[in-house]
Amino acid sequence: MNNLLQLMRNMASIYAKKGVPYLENIESCSNFPKFKEALDNLKLSDLDMPYDKKYLYNPDEPLKYLKIIDEENLGMGIFFFPDGKGFHTHDHPGMMVATKILDGTLLSRSFEPLDVERQKHLHKIIAESRENEPGCAKDLEAGLIVKDLGTKELKTGQAAYLTPLHRNVHNVKAVGETAMLDVFIPNYSHRHFYTLVKDQENKDHRRLIMKLKGTTFNSIQLKYEDYKNK
Ligand SMILES: [Fe+2]
Image (cartoon, rainbow, N blue to C red; front, side):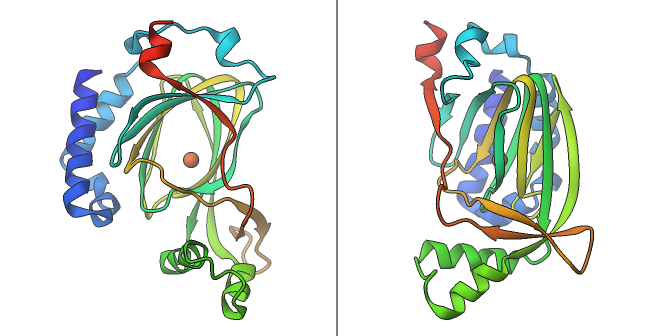
């Protein structure tokens, strides 16, 4: 665990100096294979905390998120999905996200924007609250064309990665109770949710329409240090 934390901190500090272009090429960075290996080796037991399934996966309560690291350039935490729960289609603007399944099975369907500049343009419209300007409304309505990379099944012990350019948009759904650990560089500050529509012109492509409302996950946030000593 300490080795993994050290590698994550190194990567986050390089990001602080170099910005998003570093994350765009992170798969060819010398630290990345070591980070991948450390994450592959991580087990639930390394987290040295109680695994109270009844509490963590209570389907009558909002989703539990256990925050382990919460810094500007680095985030790490575990989502505990009750059976059948997940996140609908969303993105990770300018981020690298590494996911490790600590327990259970997750279905993850990924998409890759064909035109990243257009994705940035749509994000900018939202950030600047210009969605009601005529040209902007039209652009938002036309949405974003993405390649559908299909659904991957991730089981206990398996990991997956996304970068600002690759697999940046996805939706996830748990099959059975599932603990998903995520590492974020930089930490999550905002995201966009999308409605998925079939693209008429290409069967491998989908059209994503950005939703303007309901852009947050409803969750109960737990602090690692508090929960660990519970
Ligand atoms: Fe995500």
